[in-house]
Image 1: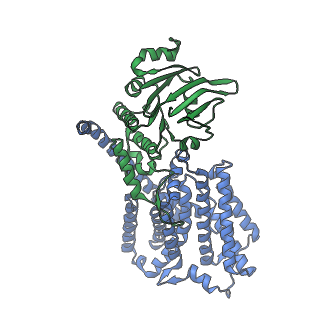
Image 2: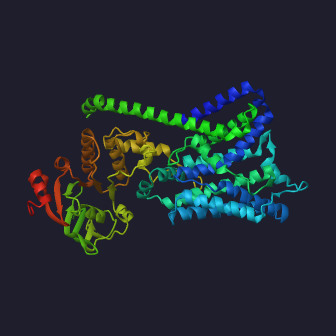
Image 3: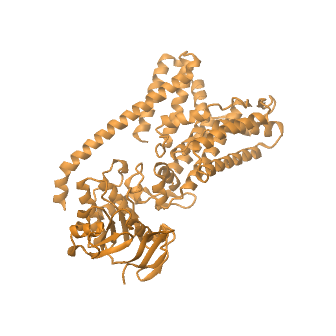
Length: 335
Length: 246
């Protein structure tokens, strides 16, 4: 865990302590369980977004994809009677396909990621609404899928299944990002694509994979959300969720220019965002101010981080200058 | 038998003759200063050697064997490495990560193959020591001076077991003290038997470090002589055309 992540963790604990003092219900097991469930749900999607942001891209279509996958999955399973494992595989395949399409348009057709995924946002939302004729897709009251519900909305030793899923997926993705050559290449491509190409890295392939991973993780998140809400209104389900994911990544120390950020950072970002949502509810702040609180905190956070970065750079610069004048004779006498 | 031989190399792009009948040879450990005004054909020559594009006429030989480069990777396979002017480093990564970028050592069995950080730190520390650079493997490139960045870029070529290193204006954008550092690095390469082609506009650098100077003018080689037998004044004259050839 680097210094940035540690700072964010301290901020989360400090905010938590203040909220706990003002309203002790913050610490009730039911509140913690509910909040952590939301962390799990949003975290899965934010992890995917993080992979794209590291490459210097952005994926705006994930909220709409959540609605599309939600209505398709619920319709296939609840109405068409498809066995749910088959439906899950189909949804994952759809996610891979969409990721490949976005990656292809960005790397081969050379469209900007913002444009490609913005069009995706509009298209998938439209298809989701059209598919159900704007009606809400949902499970009936008597429809039960014990295994599916167990692994999506159940609990193990009091821990919500979504949190366990996030822990498993997060661990795998941590290894991919920080311990594999692919992860290393993501950082290289995000910072200096030309240098990466000169080094023999197949940069297009790395970028396409980032979008595929993003869509796979988002599909998993979408399935968990679908089972959590049990009914999906295609016009509103998942609205703004891409922005939550981007906000979490930015809070977690990612740069939208690419090449910066850590996996622990984005998860802490999700935790802080959900903590803020919870704070708004618990402290009796009008829920209409919800977004304003979130925006304010993110703005303060990134401003402080920016200023701290500049301070550090200045200090490093001063040290380098000192070394250059003092260190020179020492280096010469050593030779 | 020379390390690198160019025999009668020409290159034209449509009607534009970028390079006319250039013959050049290089021995192991030799440092060659390649000079010339903008558009004199230096870059074209270097790009042919680096495999960016093939010559229109003429042949390239490495250790006497004729080679045909179509992509930079072909040249790299023959031990020719390029240190780019803008250095092509990723400044969000450590020195060690940059040295090994694209050829990271790993351990484990597929699909469980992980980056071998320890090995990367260890080997890059050795490389920096060989180059007598104070660069530390764990430092981020972002925090480094121009000279240290050069050391990282040059260490990359050492890792590849290069026999010939092409350096494009390595001293263009760095401080005076760092220039000395970079020239030291070039000497280190030469000591280890690696040939260096140094493309530079800076006369003092070429006369400090190069064994031989080649001057290009309007696509032709107009001089090729030991630096000891030449002078900055003569080279300036050759570059501008005040002296026809030498």
